[in-house]
Image (cartoon, rainbow, N blue to C red; front, side):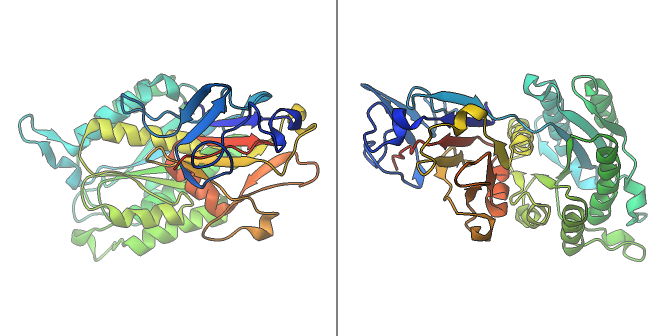
Length: 379
C-alpha cells in the first residue's frame, strides 16, 4: 500500500471549469466535491473507483490513476522506528482457545513474528522492552526499571531473530504499571533519537488491560490517569508519540492514552485472534509512516490552479474522507482540523492541522494529495 500520493494536475489538464478527461465530481460522478464516501474518477468512457472494499474484502486504496492528466508523485514515507513497550502481566496467560490451550500471549507472539517477517516491515527500526515482569506484589513504579530495552532499536530484518527470541522467552508474570513503563520507554526512545538524527522513533504500547497493581499498593499504585499523563508528557516535552495496541476485551479506556500520546485512537484487537492483532500491528506501522506535511516537487508548482486541490485520506473502514482547506495554521479547528499551503501564492509544502494529523495517523491507511485537481466523491 502506498502511504502518500501526490497527484499534480496542470491547469490546462484538469484545473479549469471544463473538466474534460479530468476528475469526476458530484454525487453522480459528474461535478463538485463531497466529504466522504467512495471515490469515482472518470477518464473518457472508463470510471475507476477508489475507497471501499473490493470483491475479496480488501481495501481498494486511493490513486489518481488515469483520472488526472499530469504527473504523479509519491510522497516519501517518514523513516520510523517502533519501540514496543510490551505488557507481560499475568493476565496475558488468559486462555483464548480452549481446544488448543492457546494463551493471549501466544496469540500476540504469533502476530509479532508475522509482523517482523512481513516484507513491508523491511527497513523500519524495531526494538522491545517489557513491563509487568516483576512478581505479583513486588511491582515497581520507577521509570528507571523500564528504561533499558531487552532488544535495542535496530533495522529489520537484522533485528528479527533477536526480537522473536526475546518475546518467545517471556512468561506472563506480574501487574500493570503502565505509566512508569511509558516514562521508561520515553527515556530510552529520546536517547536513541538524539543519537540518530533524521529518524522518527515512536512508542508502541502493547497491553491487554488498564493500569493496575492491586497487590503492590503499598509501593506502587498505577492508574489510568497516570498513564495518560505519562503519554502526554512524552509528547509535549520530547515530541515522541505513543501508539496503543490493545489485545483482549474491555479496552475502550485505552483510547485516552493514545489521545494523550498524539495518536488519537488506540488500535484495539478485541477478538484474541492472531490475524486481527497482526492487522493492527500493520496499521500502526503504516500510521507511523504517514507524513503530516509534504514537500511539493518543483514540477508541481508550475501552471497549477492551486484553488482546485484535494487532500483526503481513507479511514479505518476504507472510506474516502475529504479534508477541508484552511488559509493558514491559525484557521485550524481543534476538532475538525484541515490542511493549508505554506504559501498560498507559491506553495512549497502542504501542512496538515494538528487534529487532522492525529486522525490520519490513527487510521493506519492511505493519505491522498491532489494539487490543482478537484476530485469528486460518490456517497
